Figure 1 (spheres, rainbow, N blue to C red):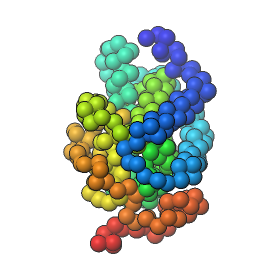
Figure 2: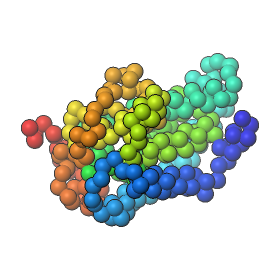
Figure 3: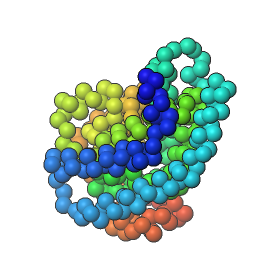
Figure 4: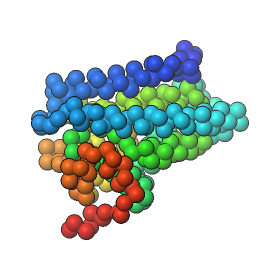
Length: 275
């Protein structure tokens, strides 16, 4: 355990890059070999677009990383947060911290993005992807990346997560998010087994259906239990899904970077107006 703590406390940036891009490459290879949806689209162009938003997310997080570090150092120094309310082995505290980081820093902000118009307008860029695959996991408007960063800091304050615990969480979050967005034809038995604990492709695909109410279900990122606890879990035949966003179905709405960056600052489009 000491080696794990030491590694993630000072994890090199190069190793974090390997986790991000290595995971993406791995899942893309599996997608190519065993895709769930066998659709024809310009994969290189699609990847390039999503990588653009991946790099903007990296830039946002790097520019504010010192804030997250300071918050983590403060909670550790003052023993502030849930994990300091009881004595337990470091492994137990890490698991609890990761779960709380996932709940507040991923599930809660994701849920709110679907309930608050201002947040939703930034989140539309993620949902507008009509060819969801592993690269979609990193497709976020820079503004959304800021909101998610703020909620990660709140999660650290609540949980008391130390720096190494945050690094474990972020590593898991990157890989699991790429996994559950991937266009992999995972055997249903294996998917169901994994879904007991983790968010899987069959579970998260439902969330990317092009219209409500399915797009307002299955908000989870790492752990599947949050949707079950808060009543937002639904099971649905993946073969009947259609990706995209009913309010942004025009090609330029989901492929033109400049237009996509401007969407949050335009008039709100209500899906109710389409009915």
